[in-house]
Length: 310
Image (tube, rainbow, N blue to C red; front, side, top):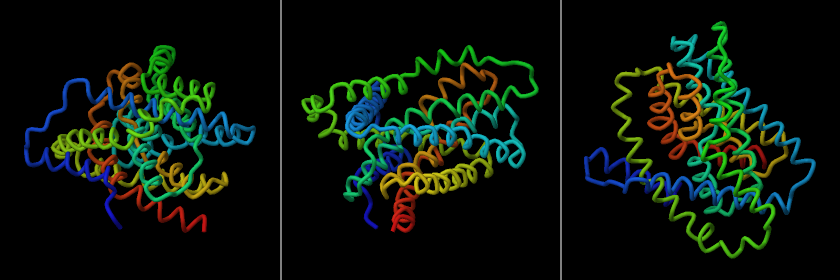
């Protein structure tokens, strides 16, 4: 199996950090790259939504929302009762793993397009839908028995989430403009893989910088960071097949189930659960799960998807 060229940039970033090479991105570039990816994904999904939108899509969307509610409910008992983490920390991490990583999703899209594997182009709608349910469940799990709910405080934070707003906004623009968005293709389509390569280069630097934190979090969090993507990804494979998705669509559903948010959910959790140890969630998602999905998970889900949909 050949290494995808964009994934090679992630490995380059990891090597640079481990070798202590002075590779530094300009301040604010990470946010710019993230914004670009979200806009590009949302715009493409909006155009597809205008072309392929139907009542059948509503049923699939509801299934994705339920999927987002189930994932943190599966992660929480592993973290709290098996791993022995505090309820509030387990709930925070569970929310991260019930949501979706836009960066991982973008890598999966590049993986499919490089192999000419078709997928449902309206998938950005599902990415946006998967953000909120896990946050709500995470708050509920943390506050159970505490007699204290702050959902009203976090809902505005979710609504103001940069990722959710930009992706949903670009999707609306794409749905309304349709084929007129072709004038933006030189930016959002032709440059997509190049921007993704830069994003992965920086993510490699960030992920490698978190490796040292694993000494303090112990082997359990490392094991969870691999086991949960396999569990969530496996359920995503089954869900994608049950919904009758294409082979590429099944892969994307698996990747959504396997990934962990490190952008939208951390911002919301800091407001909703200020007493949680948010470093645990970031370390698990960035230092373990993101590299695992990029290097192992996505290719494995690709093979399994073809076997299931053959």
